[in-house]
Length: 57
Image (cartoon, rainbow, N blue to C red; front, side, top):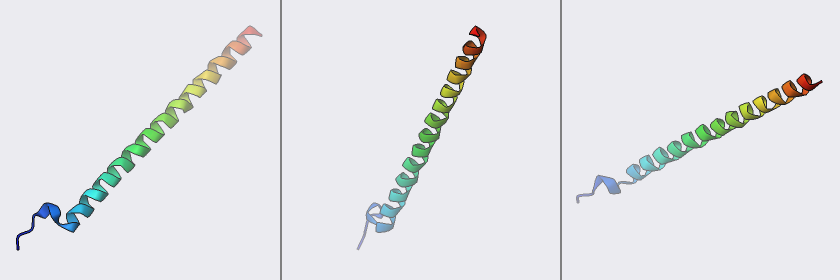
């Protein structure tokens, strides 16, 4: 009996874990990306806030 390799169960597990770690990687990639983005955003926000605050006083 000839069976296509694409129908082999192990091949399904291969693609399953492949896409699993693929989206897992990009999920945390964008997670830390926006994390540091808003981190520096508020950092400079308060930086200029106190800068003008003390400059006016």
